[in-house]
Image (cartoon, rainbow, N blue to C red; front, side, top):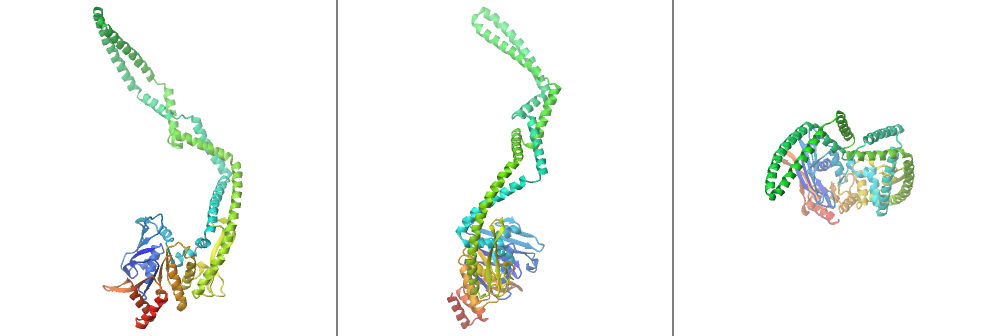
Length: 539
C-alpha cells in the first residue's frame, strides 16, 4: 500500500504530501484544485509517460516520491520501499528504488505489480492478454494451478529439446567447419605431448642456462678455495701425525682430521665435476626455447596452465565424439520430444476444459456486476480458444471481450474507449477477481462519469468491498461514493504570495458530512448535512 505520497512542482502543485490509509481512500474537492494532478503524479512515479508541460511554471523539474509498505515481499523483508522520480525540463530522468538508481523501464516494470490506474488504459495490466489469462487462471483455483506447474515443467523441457535439435540440425557446412576447428585444436594439443610438471622443469633448466656463466665462476672459486683448505688441512694432518707418534692419545684426533681431509677431497671432486654440467649444446638450447614457446602459445590459446589445457583437450574430444554421433543423438531427442509433446497435449486439453468451464462462470458473474453498475446491456465475454501451437499457457489463447451496448458487436477489451464506462467495466472485473488479484493498490479515475443515483451507490459499495483486500484510491464527484470511503481527503486551492497551489486536508467525521453536503447541494446547509449523514449511515 501507499503510505505517503510527496509531490513537488507538478502543475499547480507546489509541495504536497498526502498520507494515505488502508482500505478505500476518497479524494474530493473543487474543480481545478489538482485532484487529477495527484493521479498524474502517481502515473509518473509508476513509470508513465511524462510531458515537460506538467512541470510547475518557473521551475526546472518535477519530483514525485512514494513510500510503500509491501507485505510478504522477499525482496523487502521489512516491507518498506521508497520510490522516487525526478524529471527535468531537458528531459533528464532520475529514478530510484530504495536509493538505487534504475531506468524508467525498470521502474515501470516494478510498479506494474504494485499499482493499477483505472482510467489510463496504457497502465492497465488487465488490458494485456498475458495478464488476462492469469486473471482467469487465478479464478480457476488450485486444481488448474497443479496442472500449470506440471505443464510448465514439460514446456521448459520441450523448449530445451527443440533448441538442441535446432543446434544439431544447423547447416552441415557450419558443422563441418566446427568439427575441423575442434580436430585442429585437439591435434595441436595432443601432438605437444604435454606433461603436468613439465613447464616448471623447463623454466628451471632455462634459468640454469641463463646463469651458467655465473654458476661456473662460482664453482671455480669454490674449487680453488677447497684446494687451499685441503693444503692447510694436509699440513695439520702431518703435524698431528708427529704428535700421535709420541703420544697415542692423539690417535683419535688424527683420525678425525684425516676424515675431514678426505670429505673435503671428495667434495672438491664433486663440485668440480658439476662444472661440466654448465656446458650447453646450441641445439639443446634451441630445443629448450622452442618447447617453452610452444607451451606459452598453447596456454594463450587454450588455458592458463597445462592442467587447464589438458582439461580443454578432454572437452574437445567429448564434443568431437558428440558431433560425430549427432544422428544417433538426434533420434533420441526426437523420440524424447514426441513423448513430451504427448504429455503437454494431454495437460493442455485438461487446462482448456478447466478454463472453458470457468470462463462461463466468470462471464456470468461479471455481467451481473455490470447490471448493478447500470450497464444492463453490456456483455462481457472471456473467450478461450484452443490453438494449434503450444505456448507458455498450454494451447489456449485467452482474451477478454466486451459489448458495451445492446446490439453492438463485441470487441477486445483493450479497444474500448477510456473514461467512466471503461472504469466501471474494470470495477466489475476487479470486484469479481478482487480475491485473486495480487496488485495491492488500485486507483480509479473518472469512474463516476455519466452515472448517478443507484449506479453511483453500487459503484461506491463495490469500491469499498475491494478496499477490504486492496488499497483503493478514487477521485469522485458523487456523494454516494464519497459516503462509503474509509478515509476522505479534501483537495483545494490555496494562494500563497500571489501564487495558487494545491493543498490537501484529511477530513474528520464531521468534515466528511460537510463535504458530502457540499457535493450534494453546492453549499453546506442543515438539510444537506442531514442528507449526507443519511448517506453515510446507509453504508
